[in-house]
Each structure stands twice: as C-alpha cells, then as structure tokens.
Picture 1 (tube, rainbow, N blue to C red):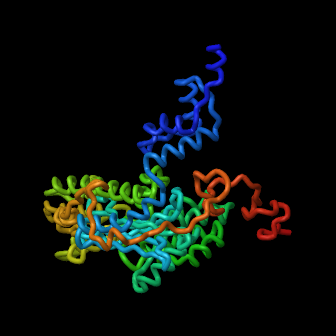
Picture 2 (spheres, one colour; picture 1 turned 30 degrees about the vertical axis):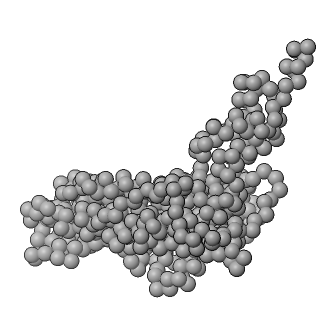
Length: 475
C-alpha cells in the first residue's frame, strides 16, 4: 500500500514555484525549467513535465517581483524620488492620451555635471528589452580624462516608437538631425566595416587591415595611399566608403577632433553589463541601470581622488609609451619654437601651436614621440602643460565632483498627493505565440559568417566564377 501511494506522488505548480522562488531572487543567476525538473527529481523523487516547470518559474517570478504592469503604476513615484534625491536633474516621461507609457528620459545631475569637463563627443545606442512589454533601452556615454566610461543619460522607449535601422542606426541619425541640426554625427568604424564585410565578400579579408589603418590615419597623404590600394583591390568598396562620407568615419577628414573615440564600444559594453536585467520589470530595470552607473561613478571618483600629479590613467600611459620610443631621434632647431626631427624621414614640430607634421601631436592633444624628443632637447621636465586640459587632474576631479547617493527603499518612498494619484498604464503589447526569443534576429549585414556559396571572382551570390558577368573573361 505504501509503495502504491509513493508511486502516485505528484508536485503541483504552486508547490514547485514555492521551492524554486529562493533560487530566482538574483536575476543574474540562470535557473532554467530543466534545472527545476532536475531539482524536484533529486530532492523529492517526483518527475514533472517541462510545462509544469515553466509555469512554476513564471509564478515564482511573479511572487518575487510582482506583476510587470505594477512597475508602470509606480513610475510617477519613482521619478519623484529621483528628482528629490538628485535635484536639478532632467527627467521627462511622456504618456499617450489614454495615460499609456510612451518613453522615459533620465539625465541625473551627477552624471551630466561631469560632461562639462569631458571631450564633447558622445556615443548613442539602443538595446531591445526582454520584459513582458518589451521596449528599447537607449543610453549615451562619453570618455572621461582617464579614459573610463562616463554615462550621461539613459531611457526606455516603447516598442512602437522604436525603429532601429541596421545601417549605422539611421533612425538615431535622423533624430539627431532633427533635434541637433548643427551638431555633426559620425559612424562607428566597426559597424561600417561589418557592412563592407557583408556586401563585398571577395575582397573582405584583404581589406580589413587597410580599412582600419585608413580610418585611424593621422595624415591625408597616408589616407590617400591606402585608399588607392582599396581602389586597386575592389573599386566598389571605395565607392561605398565615398557614399558613406569620409568625414563620418575617417579621423583625418573629421570636422571635429574625435580623439580616440572611433567606435561605439563603450555603449556596447554598457548593454553587455545589463543583458541579464533586460528581463526585469521596467522599474527594477531602471534601478539596475542607476545602480550600475552609480557604482562606476563611485569607482571613477575614487580614481580621480588620487590622481594629483599625473594625467588621467590611460593618457599617462600613452605619454610614458611615447617617451620610451623617442630615444633614437635627432633634433635640429629651426627657430625658438620650430624644430626638425629626423627618424626615417623628417618631421616638423611647432611647440607654440602644439602641432606636428605627422598629425599625432595636435589630434591626440598629447605630446607624440617627436614632440617629446624636442621637449627633452629643451630640458622641459613637465610635459603636462602641452597636453589637453581634458586629461589633467583638475578636469578629472570636477567630472566626479557631485557624488551619486542611493535612493531610499521602495517601502520608504514618499510623494505628494498629485504624484500618488497620477496614473500610468503599461503600453499596449500583444505577446507573440510560442517561446520568446532569447537573441534578437540579426540583419543580413550583421552576419559575419555566411554559409552560402558565392562567386569566386566578384563575391556575389546567385552565380559562380564561370557565369560571372562582373569580371568578364579576357578573350
């Protein structure tokens, strides 16, 4: 009788969710339905189906985090607390006529205050969220005087308002042209190369090093030589890069000094740090973003506190490396400020204007190897006066002058009556049938590895070398 009862023991979804809930408190921990099935079988000797485990996990998450729509109803109180803790911040939320959430923009005072002391180059990017109501997380960042990531602003946009283009984010570029018509915008050289990689398969392996050398070239003469090589290998790539605009991706053709900001890697790094939080409700996700940016702000503030007599960490290393390379050069003075430096050719240095014929001195705004050997010739000990003010300790300290303090716990939030009664509904979203996608569907030009046959002559698909019309055979 006992064996018969034990063989019919079953586990309900309610029971399994109660057992599983403690393991799901940390959103960074991966605990899949298969793990739940294994736990129930190991500890209780009961076999449950995958569907039961999935429903149990959903119920456990609801027990821990509440319903996803609850985060939108508390949005007004959350914004009120942000404005209270961080006065003079710029926080805006937009709703529809039916009080449905459209977008939220957050620029906290401690973050935007430091932008006055950073190079005025920002990177903008977006990432699709995986929560119940989807949406897109957008952020903008820059680099501080130590070469560290300094977030500036972030927000969440409803899915209906988000149309991210696949070619250099055309929707972001369009929005920038409307809001900031007189501000130049540039392309990430890595994303631009991915487009070249996908569209011109025949020459992609040969052109990789040439393209990056071209984008980072300091002299127009070097750029033109490399572009001539590109034209010789595949003239279609040259036409594509011309259509994109040299000023959008080339350092030497840029209308402003981009410094070392040639890619959008800093915002990609932010998205990578938040990938586990994409599944959270909107309020929990916004708190994860604030906590992440707050921890970076605190760490960078600590670094700035003991940077007193040197440049920012990254640029001090650049200065040391340049100094180590300047030992085998010959200097010939032409005037008080103009010098000739001989090393595999002649370079001109003007200390008064802080320029070098090679281009590095005035574009990097830090003494290059040729400038350092001239300064040593003049017995200049302190080379920091020839560096950009963005790299100096004063600018770094002022960047993180305002600390990011934590906000109270949700149970201790207090708000005025008009904020409490304000209604915010979640956006209208119809969940698609089937299992939700864990990874976004990539566009054709983002797929680096393509397992399709293509022509060995021109690299295009749909024909082979024998039937190629782009490169006709010589008779």
